[in-house]
Image 1 (cartoon, protein in one colour):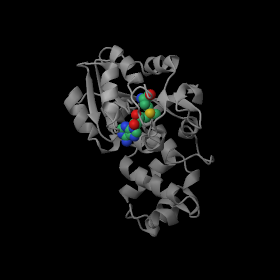
Image 2 (image 1 turned 90 degrees about the vertical axis):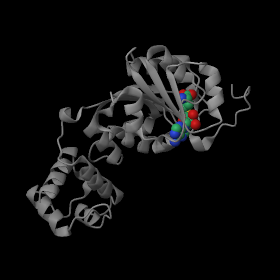
Image 3 (image 1 turned 90 degrees about the horizontal axis):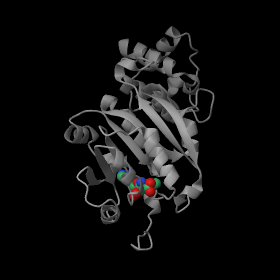
Image 4 (image 1 turned 60 degrees about the vertical axis):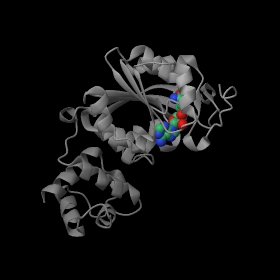
Length: 277
Ligand code: SAM
């Protein structure tokens, strides 16, 4: 198809198209798509996955940034009333408005072979949508999948692993060889499924998750600094050094502790102490 359409593959858009039919059907099966489901596909490309999704779901909203792919995609999937095709950058789309309009506000499922250059911002954005998203089944870089499930003490532990643990239950569906794509990427991939908790079912509670993630972002943005230093200098937080040190004392933590050793539960406790003081 790339040759037939003289399509210029765009590296800057993370275009590695899936060419393995077995992998395509396994993704749809792992996502558990049924006839009542509305699916959001990010980056449908030439429609390899879109066709499978349209076979199972009641509606597919496909958001593709590259306008040159739109006519190719329309040619592949044909006319289908179940398909809502949007030519836009997923990070600029009003997701809540879209879900309200296309699924009357009921939760949707996300399925995608993600563009790897923006995996983390996409996942962070999706997880922060509360109960608007039921599950996220995506192909990502294998190392990023590993990073998602790391805990304190590991170099890969950070804002992404904490967001995944706070908002969802994660499991790796399968690993996928780089040979399953064209053009072939440099790295192997993995399909992961995140089942997003309803806010009331989250195992770790926190009064103000947005504040907790601002704290986490500041703590890991300045990994080498002590937590008190990183938080008191963050432009995203309005916290005095004294308040932070008092909170750490309440938690029986040293003033010189670094953020990277705190567990999710401890970040939630720290955030609650700071917002209640
Ligand atoms: N789904 C297709 C497949 O499996 O063969 C293509 C997957 S390819 C890894 C990633 C797709 O995401 C490309 O079609 C690319 O143009 C699209 N894309 C890249 N950045 C995007 C963005 N910000 N918003 C929406 N789509 C994007």
